Image 1 (tube, helix red, strand yellow):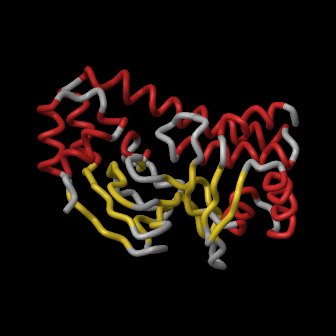
Image 2 (cartoon, helix red, strand yellow):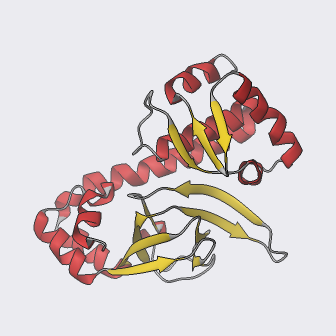
Image 3 (cartoon, helix red, strand yellow):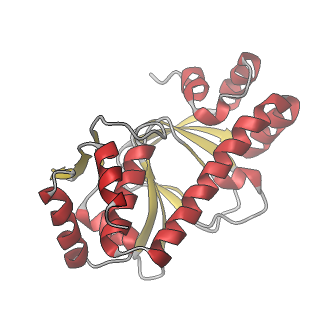
Length: 230
């Protein structure tokens, strides 16, 4: 059974709220369950809510008219998503799907904004996390414009490992669900092209694939290796 209050309390974006606000948020949140690849919300929708992943993983993506999916990022449990909560009249730029079976704690956006107004001490933490998301997006744009293929793929793997480690780059190995096809989709590459790049990282001992999952053996070592490629 999901402890809604514990999920909210442990989520970074709620770190600046006092316990009273967490209790209120938990009483207004709902638990939602999704099967693998099930749509959580579609691109272009106006519904505003902030979601915290209690179990499983969620991918943020866009699907074109032909059904081709472009994956932006994959979030692990404990992570929040639903950035339009800060601009409620703006259509969602990306959609969200359960990457594997996922349980979501969903809090209405209007109520979250009300909590921020009532507990202004939350603002520094929220603004810092939103700024980090913006920095990450700008870094990806820079990578695509200025870096070579090997570095681009390596930095995306490092970023995913960081996201699955609470935003930190540590020496401990990190494993998460990701296939070569997912990586090719993220990078706008063919599977054949990305396969060659990934084989190089495997040969260097930085990553390993097994049953639809990838392990980044030592994110710190990968980060240092990528510096030699720039």
